[in-house]
Image (tube, rainbow, N blue to C red; front, side, top):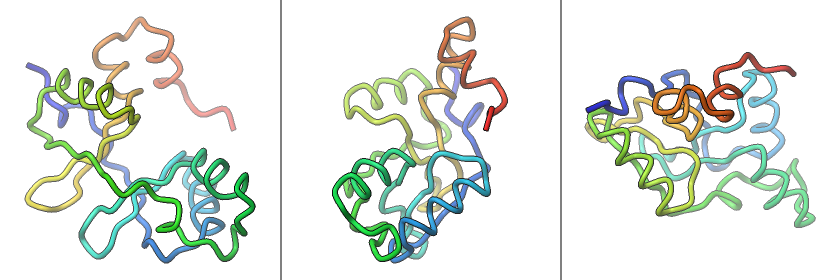
Length: 138
């Protein structure tokens, strides 16, 4: 059995739900990532992606400078443990139609597993795995 902990991402960026969309977008740009984990103290309350900022924020006419992350964050966070089976994590992503799962141990965020991580691990010859394993081009 391959576990989530064997290939999860541990390079995480977390932000507070009161941070603005602009701050999140700048953090994503500066860190060359496409998402931030939104936390309230030590509790994970959601994930905001670059797409969320575009679709739930800007496209809805919200000001990126005043809109807070907690206004666009999905509240139902599905999490996994680093000891969970990778296939079970993929099944959760499919069931809940999410592309990223925070990895929690003892109530603490320790990683993030994405659809791309699973593709690289489970189907290394797939197009998604090839794209996910490549260096960013921007």
